[in-house]
Image (cartoon, rainbow, N blue to C red):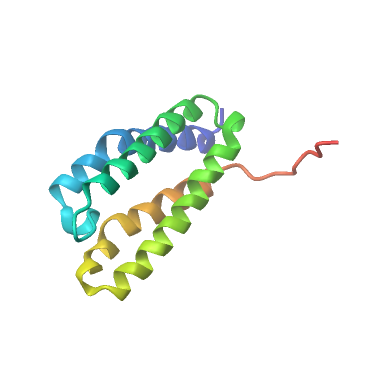
Length: 127
């Protein structure tokens, strides 16, 4: 296994664990950068549930990333979209500006790291 694949496996494991365990603590201990105002507990529970589920599947994907390319690319592009929408919202509403230093760059970090570590190559035809 090459070093890029080892790094990808490690990144998938780290991001998966963060999505399962770390997201809650970031919202708890750095609310200005990770919680939206006004606090909406139902929304927070929903988003934590979605990300915890993604975290479980990223951990599963860390065992053999090449068998889980679609999931990994979903994590990349959904992080880009989520981060971009939140960045615009933080810029539009000055009360949420701290998100530009919290969850917004975290989402872009996930996208950049996984996107750069994913192997590139020729696609085989489905025919």
